[in-house]
Length: 304
Image 1: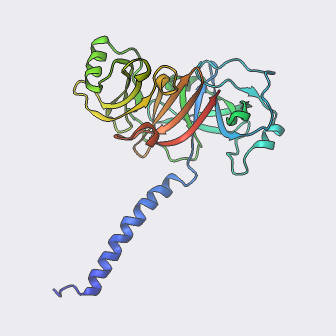
Image 2: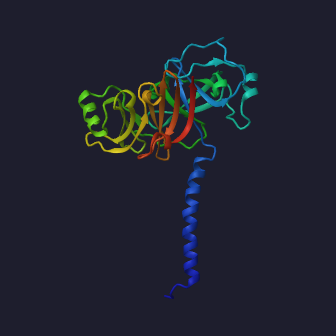
């Protein structure tokens, strides 16, 4: 067998470098360069409301023609909008949603169910203080599929997107945390009081917990966000302290849904709420990341 020449080694090095660069690009291309996800909230027995694009109407919001408040109380109440008015503000590269359009809702079993858009809506904010307004739609899910949607919050995507595998274990564990568990968590994360503790499971089946606690009191009080492994041998994966406590958006932070976004990705629908406004985000969870470091797929916000 002849020994490898310098040319042979250069070819091997080139092939290796090409594979390292091309394979991630191919995986990304498989997901699609225009891949998008949107938050949707339960509106009534069979419909969800979603906002596809931030826009500016350039006028002050009015209180006419308000639809009923969604069944999801911490979401943003929609108002009807005429198709012509929507087209006037729709971004040139915006999502081309329309009445009768179909979208996939990510279901609790890791599959999808279909949602058909039934009417056009808007959420008109006070844009003069820096807020965006939003355009979107109500969408109906067939009655037999509603049982697969356990949360008031869901995530939707285009129907031609590559799907996650069925049988996903991603999800949020609802219900109060026993006082003994809260005391054990407080000893791990440190602080003065546990405000919220929410166990969840990632798309890969890993048990995780989000804990929100206060640290200190009075003017020195801080809000601590901590991500941990599951019980009973909980271990801190990441933590951050934020200034102040009860009056901030982060003090009102709660997880509202956990979904499998495909390719091993775990999506968290996060609601941040205070007397000064509220914000709903869809972020892509990652161990060891602070909330602000997680990839944001959508943000809907209304702050005073």
